[in-house]
Amino acid sequence: MLSDVLAFNIFHFGLIMARMSGALFVMPGFSATFVSTRIRLLFALMLSFIMVPVVSDNFPPFPIHPLELLMLIGGEILIGFFFGMLMAVMLSAMTTLGTIVAFVAALSNAFSFDAVSQSQGSIISTFFVNLALVTIFVTDLHHLMLGAVVDSYTLFTPGQMPPIGDFAEFFTQTVAGSFKIGVQLAAPFFLLSFGFQLAMGLISRLNPQFQIYFVAMPAQIMITLLMLMFTISGIVMVFLEYYQQNLIRFMEP
Image 1 (cartoon, rainbow, N blue to C red):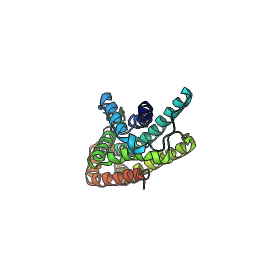
Image 2 (tube, rainbow, N blue to C red; image 1 turned 45 degrees about the vertical axis):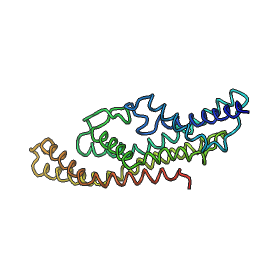
Image 3 (tube, rainbow, N blue to C red; image 1 turned 30 degrees about the vertical axis):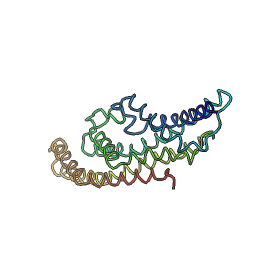
Image 4 (cartoon, rainbow, N blue to C red; image 1 turned 180 degrees about the horizontal axis):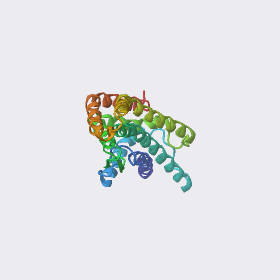
């Protein structure tokens, strides 16, 4: 009897570990290269151990055939990966914003390494992504990220085939929403760019011999950074509200 209970709990632990590992593999902050792989593994093991008595009520019985076991574990990894990717896509709104601001400031060719996305990006884009990640952890929104994965067991019960079509549709909507909020946050810089370029065009027409764009580039950078200084607090607040509202949708009511 004791061996049956022990094997059953280990089976539950393995299923939970599969979903948590899939989420932490791509979840913002936890999946960054500056986080040690051993730390991520220990964190996933700890969360899985805590969650066993909480979410294992409706788990399926231990499958008889190895193929069924592999499909069950693969489905759990897919669900965890899906939730982690949703959180990463929502964070990419700041990448869109930073790219637009970099174009407006004429700094789109100034690249730096972004440790979050693990790729090269403009300096302003990297700044926005890292700022958003820091504020997510400072405001404890990472608790909602982990809570969304925990409450996913009320939406997707282990043993059932993941709804691939619904996953694809919802993921597409999330990508579109992330791009939309990024463009909306960049609206003041669109207006700034339009006004600045219009003024430079008028000056160029009044004095064709004057190399206006060469001379005006320092002013363009300075005005954009000045605009950024006045709007950055509002940008962060709007992004945090957007991120929180999207995470709450997955939380159990």
